[in-house]
Image (cartoon, rainbow, N blue to C red):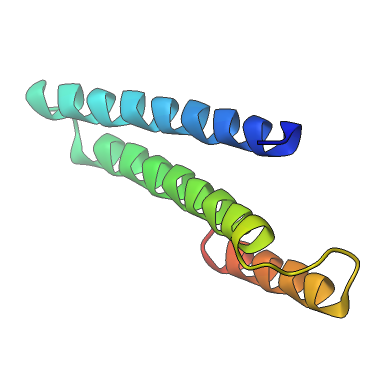
Length: 90
C-alpha cells in the first residue's frame, strides 16, 4: 500500500470515527428528548459526512481498482466524473 492509499485509509477511518460519535450524540439527544429540530441538524451533518466518506471510497476505487493508466485521457475523464459525483452527493 503506497503512502497516498495509507493516508486516504486513515482519513476515512477518522471520518468514520467522528460519524460514530455524532450518531452516539443523536442517541443521547433522543434519550433526553431534545428538540427534534436540533436532532435533524445533527442528522443532516451525519448525512453530509457519510456522503463525503462515500466520495472518498469511490475515488479510491476509481483510481486503484479500475486499471486505468495514469496520464491518459481516460484518467482525465475519470477525474471529471469523480468531481461530478462528489458535487452531486453533497
